[in-house]
Length: 253
Length: 325
Image 1 (tube, helix red, strand yellow):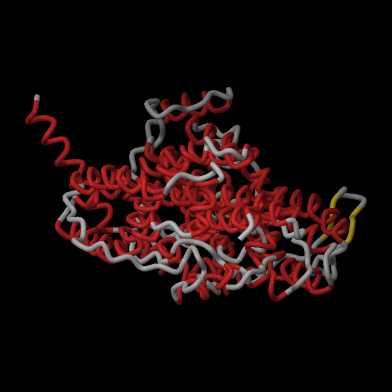
Image 2: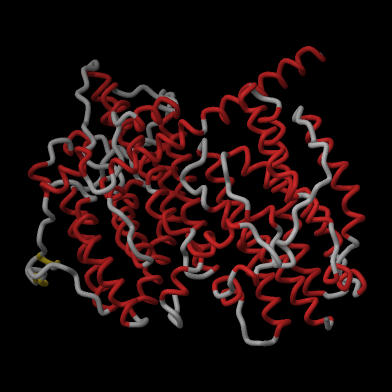
């Protein structure tokens, strides 16, 4: 794999994570438990879609085949998506949505500071902008996980169920492959395995305050970021997200 | 206009106090929450601001319907930001209503059980992407017609909320018109979608101003109190006069064969909407009334455990803090 190909793949991973999670979060619009949460969810989705425009825009530039961020978002099929399995998991209840957000944010917030020091200035600049937003995302998602974990019996039960359901998708975030290794060697991305300890410290503190029990399993599902085997959920999401572009090819909107 | 047919309340206060109150309004003073106000003024405002707030909240649904199908990342971001603004408007308006002594939860309950209304327009379905354009252009356009004068309404908190809301609404209207421009100048299929959206939203938009003045029984007192600034017909005329040239610019046809310029009055003559349809919608028989109310009820019921959980956690934190002191 040439460096440019690895870089393209890596940028797709960053952009697809924010695209798919942003889309999922946007599905809540108008249906949140309380008005402030409607606003916060829309705000988070908006940040993530904004980051997507930057990451996928750069991916298209690096690829050099004339594909825009929109082309990449709207005209690729499931096997070409490079997002983590975690972010394509359905929203479930509000607790499941916030648990997914918290696990992703805690990873994202470890990754981005390292990316701000990337040898590629374009990546460093996007990461610096995203970092400000993601710092707030984790503040909010961790506070909500803590509040609901340590709330009523029912909210605790639901949050524990969400954690148990989503925990098998945590490992993929920290398991490097050839693309991650190439990016690390090029001085762009950190060593993913080194992020794990920091993530664990942070998540352990959140879960302790939330009175939740971390599942006693290191089993990790994989296949999202390589595109080898996504879950069945992603195809349905793309069917909706890409519908207009597919139904009216070549139209501008 | 997000408040329709707001019933004004009769008031039985001391005539001297009433006269003093009216004098303040006539002098252009703002009434603030702690000031004396007639009971009818307070109740009418609660009804009007509440209905407006509910409209913002229910209004998230027809547009939220297209967020997950927006055709580009930019359009998705714009629509998300717009719907987020609307939730924010709901929040300011509920806060303004709270200054009159009614809680957000009380108002929400009245929306959910159907005792309070929201604008008839949100009971119409959004069927194509062009509807996002039509809603911004026509629905926000009609809302602005009413809300701009309401910036000068007599009740301080409502007036200040309107000033903030109007800034965002005019942005929304331009975004909607921009969607329509893209569609009207696009492929034949897009142009057809744009025309279809105009066909479906034209009359429901005219209905947003409420029934004709001659049938509007609630206007006089509200206008005297500067809760309502213009009559329904004045605003409707202004809206038509502004919108017809915009439709012409787009190359779209307003679905009204009788539409023509009247030199004498300096405005368009146009057909009235079907008021029996309007009353059907108001009474709960619009195309989407059932779905809209069900969606809000479901969100509220499904979210109960979240609200209870967060309240319980906050109480535990308070107790722990007290124990530590």
